[in-house]
Image 1: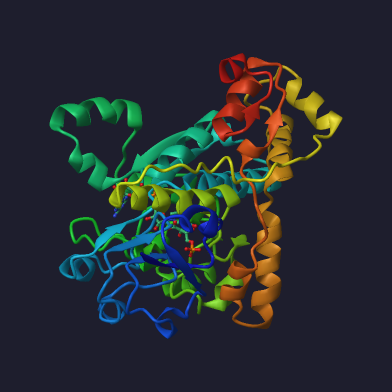
Image 2 (image 1 turned 120 degrees about the horizontal axis):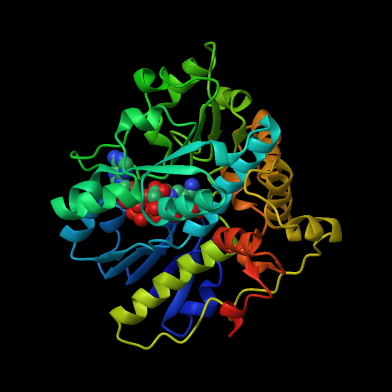
Length: 400
Ligand SMILES: NC(=O)c1ccc[n+]([C@@H]2O[C@H](COP(=O)([O-])OP(=O)(O)OC[C@H]3O[C@@H](n4cnc5c(N)ncnc54)[C@H](O)[C@@H]3O)[C@@H](O)[C@H]2O)c1
Ligand SMILES: O=C(O)[C@H](O)[C@H](O)COP(=O)(O)O
């Protein structure tokens, strides 16, 4: 079985070399390969799979993307060609959540507000949105959800129940939230279009006390309208990980947003490795072979010293509504991931040239909070750090 894989998928040889004859291609160079005998094609989000590719691949049986989003797949064309397809739903949900946590906590500490005093609206309550809700809730925020497809899927009775415990809101309420986190796909479903959900009209309703984060897909925010909005008075603070027309984005936006990154919110080592792993499991299922390899067996160890003063601060019995405590949580998160580094690399490189693609290809190894085990002596710190995804080294529930 000939398997062709995007080189950007970590551990692809560890996973797939026992399942077939593996060859790899670099992003942007798929059509330069001999595709005539390929039966399995594994890609990431930068490779479009449409009729142009499919006509070169008469033997293709299985195509997978090691990413959560699959808007680069022409599903109709793939299914019409009789090819099995799959994505890696949820693989990088933790990574994106940690990106959102870093963005929000950093801005909160800069502006001197407490998350416990804020309302956060999450647009898209899927694998990512659910985790963002959990993380922001443990930090004390009041979290509401906007996800019309999900609401519509519930029965009338379930809607009644979940309205009280999941806090679904309408879009007007989203626009009045203090912080808006976009984690929706670019949805081509005409019943729930997400393209330009944030446009001239809706962006005009945001003000300088609000923060808008887009870590879903670039097209959910009209970037032309955003550029105009950001040059007008009373503009909101913006965080953009995803952009319209990547990799050739509107560079004029960069100086006007608080955090600008190169579509790397999901690029933790764990997130990318889980993407490869999910495709491995799906292919094993497809060819009816037992899956033997685990992600944990491949990930390297992570070491990092926690400064004693920070450890002491976290162990102090404290209240949620304490700015020093929030600052300490941010300092701990930054030991594992610091969004400011990604932002400064992006600004520096993008000010010189259109280097979006190169920044992504050269992205350094980034770990998730779960790589760091920390002792937490008080219950609130344990609950908070566990909710953010850290391992609590003295957690009897975890280790027994
Ligand atoms: N920045 C990144 O690196 C990165 C990483 C992972 C995912 N993503 C993007 O984020 C999206 C969400 O990821 P996920 O893993 O949570 O996907 P998911 O499929 O688990 O969840 C998507 C949710 O969005 C909802 N939704 C669909 N259309 C909507 C609309 N018009 N308005 C509001 N909600 C809507 C769906 O009902 C679903 O609950 C992906 O599709 C992908 O495009 C980006
Ligand atoms: O949808 C996804 O999973 C993300 O957007 C993913 O992180 C994109 O990563 P890429 O394939 O572009 O490296």
